[in-house]
Length: 185
Image (cartoon, rainbow, N blue to C red; front, side, top):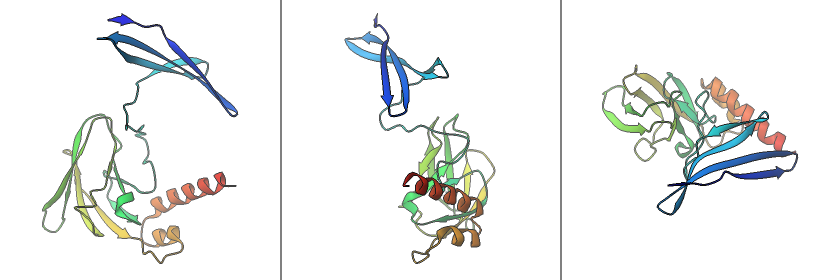
């Protein structure tokens, strides 16, 4: 094993700039990154390199209006199920999410969450109807979610969502829409 010198990359992108550097070791004639550093308020912090296809996770809030918090009962509105994400706030450990039919308690699907991943795609090939579902994450308390399909003819999705009990989700969508319209100006 041979330790390679630190490589530094300076980026200047428009009005902002960044400095990134990496350390690597040679193992069996292959260069293996051992850590990346990025600037943060004039000092460097070590960050774990991401693997290909891996997304950054934010465990404090869902990533979008279409992310369903699987730890809270409530109402959830959606346009299409293929944009719905199952989201959990604590991604420190791997856990299975059980989705059941509340009336019969029949398990429809078990969704595995890997450690450090707090978002999964909705299993729309298995569960493809609006309605009520019971979800249990790992050994937690079961929660009940009522799913509403937003009709395609609705011009104002945010108002429709508010009228159907998806108030927090509607507020998040309103913020996302304002962000998008501000960027397009």
